[in-house]
Length: 287
Image 1: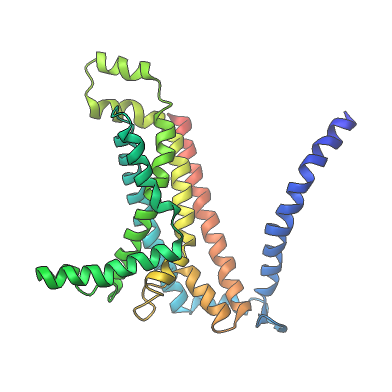
Image 2 (image 1 turned 60 degrees about the vertical axis):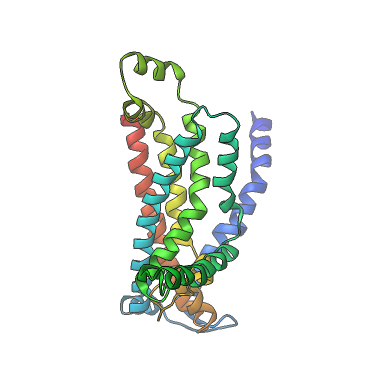
């Protein structure tokens, strides 16, 4: 028994050590710095809760949190709808063409966030402008110049990047739906929509838990696409929370204050993710 216990902890120890030094220790250090005036080189003063009190009146940070929340909600809903739709399309019996479509849909996820941001910046600023001049449609003119178009530009970019990745998750669950149930539903007279809504939709409930968690957590943490596409403009109206924290730390050199922002942001993400996991897992059990 002792040998078994020793072997267990011996194999587990490297992982625990790695987690401690890469996750737990940085968080603890960050918590300490959030109570100080720290410029990245030295701690000049221990200020207690002053940094956290300052957050309440920091309208730029609060606006970035609200912008991030709106972006996350819209993006998560659209990505999962589009990802599930694509998964349903490529799981039809169309032969080798399905493999081609799966590859095409997944490819945007392989492109780095910064490169992706510059690609879409070129599309919105150059291609859309050319379309506007050619057709006279004002819809395509001045993209990224207003908070509204900047918001939808970020949403489009993130949807284009993540939909193919989420599609793969839904495909794996759709392929595991028992064919006997689908055939039985067909014999009972269920059409394609009824077979999906009454049978498949309920059986792939775990896929919603995974997909919602991934898209929600990643949407809140997005930075490189935001920097490359709008850089927070115009006038900071499309600045997401991660960019606001980064600017506070490395542009203003208020790293203690930035750590306080990061701690609050971490708690918000953790709470939202926990609520989402609880609700979707409870739904799995109920089904």
